[in-house]
Length: 289
Length: 316
Image (cartoon, rainbow over all chains, first blue to last red; front, side, top):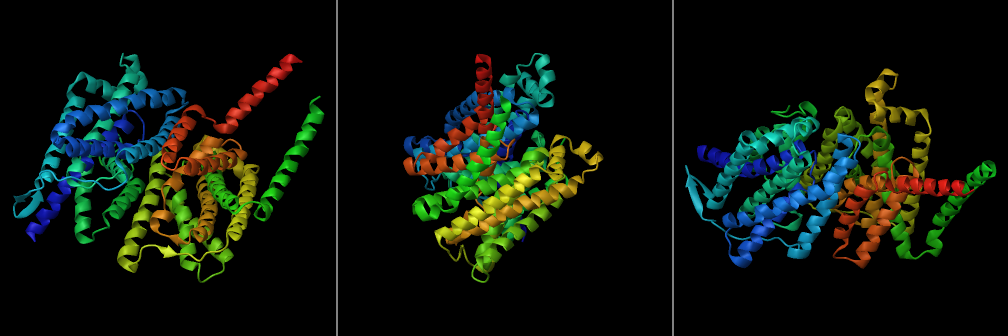
């Protein structure tokens, strides 16, 4: 019984690590850049497929290929913001109008990225085996790659938190999140910071994708499900709160693991029930402003 | 100089509309089978887009629930198709969607902005995964067979719903009811203070717009013959009506109609010409439409028209 409990809890934490990471990325994109990125999952998919390609064709292990995939996905995100969202932002009369338009533009992006991926990699499921040997924790057995995934999610999350809390760039990002106009007046280069945030958000998704590809099968259409999970975590933690997203990610991972144990196949349904109840009862989330 | 011109346009526009209607009403007699099927798809998207615009256009509440309401109609058709005659099924499909919209509306319409958007989209995904789980674990089936009717019957049914939805949208827009909806979009608090029953109005309109989406779903199911949750609650059907409405322009009634017609034709054209690239091209067009057509095709045309007529006046 205790082993089962431990089993379920640890499985939840392992899943939660990835959820937390991708939600922090979306939190940055929506909380600061005000882009509700429906195509967030596509960046996860890109990260996953870049990692898969590097491992399958060049034998580069996922933890090394992070050094290639992260800057690449960051650059894609950064450029997308500069050529697409920056223009939408200046042409929109209000923040609400920008949010609506940018969300729809993201839906167009979703189509574009997904279909470029299908053209490049084909529509089939793909996977590879890396560090798949079992590790024993208090009687429960887990694949080593999942434990590494959790470790990396925590490391990335912490590094990112320190970046926000302790550096000058982090201060500029926080200022832009609070009040873009005032931050601009104080000498923060707003359009650059917002592009940076969007790029960083995409990068977190890419990192998440690398971690996903280590433990799960991947395919070009996998994105939307992860986008929805990131969105749910975002609301659970409170829109715009980075620690909230992190806690929310682990919480949702635990819930998913428990529900999967009780009734496999119902995890996603449970997520949406939580999501909708939360929106009705407390839309500001756990740590919302 | 202006007077005769005004009279002539007043006659020409209804005349053209009647002609168009006659052409559409008899098209199964002279058009190819493919054209009839394509027109049915176009009608379906016009129904979804116009009914989306009835609620979301004036109020500014962006609903991503069309796929949920459409799917409710599709499933009604699958469940009752062998039991009841088709018109009854369509009516019940619409009513089922309306009931769903009443519940959802009563729960959520106090959510504003992005929260409402997220909830409505969550609803689609929730229904999709719930029905999937239900079919696998409770009924032990995946997918259902829907009784089919001829292409022409589907065509006329969709045309009927299309005419009703356009008539309804027109009547709402030009009534006190439409004005009240508009006032909600501009300032909800002020509308409430001037005596508009904000909540009741929002929920009724939401349910009305869902009715047509459900009816469209019930009709389309008969054309597909086989349905499963992923077909019925396809999230793309939530986004396309929104994009089509914006592409056409939501300011005028004919905006969404034109937007849906052009977009659906474009999709069909791209599928047949570039089967491997069409979604990619479609995505690019979407992004460009959002970037460069902020007021939709109608807005751009009106601007162009103004410029041309101004030019004429300058010449004379």
